[in-house]
Length: 120
Image (cartoon, rainbow, N blue to C red; front, side, top):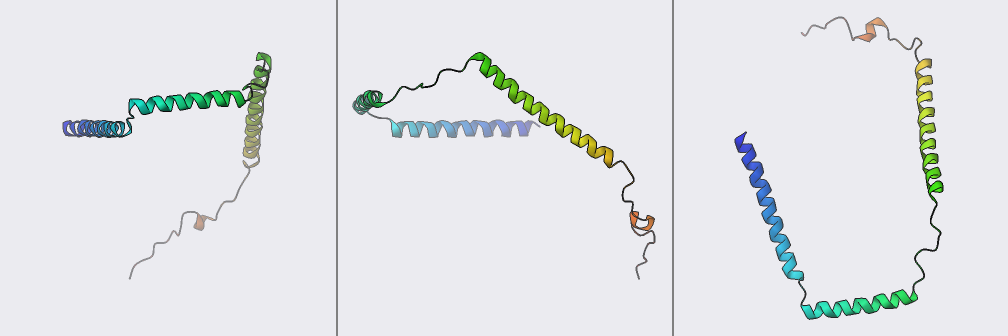
């Protein structure tokens, strides 16, 4: 049991070291110079101001009242409960109709052949 635990801990440590190495390499590869970052920031700000001048207001609908939201929630729960009740009712009716005498195979077919065959 001690070896299994040691193997698991070594596997976790190896996975963490590999992950840390990959993150370090990717971070160094994508690191931008401060000048490039400043230019990019200025471009984004210009684009945001242009978009805000051209865009329509974000909220065109009135917010939904609490009573409407609660009513919708109750309606969804009610429909789900009604469907579950109808399903249970149908399942119970199905059991009642199938309680009668159903197909029963003949005795010689029920458990295979009663005679054993001898090998020659």
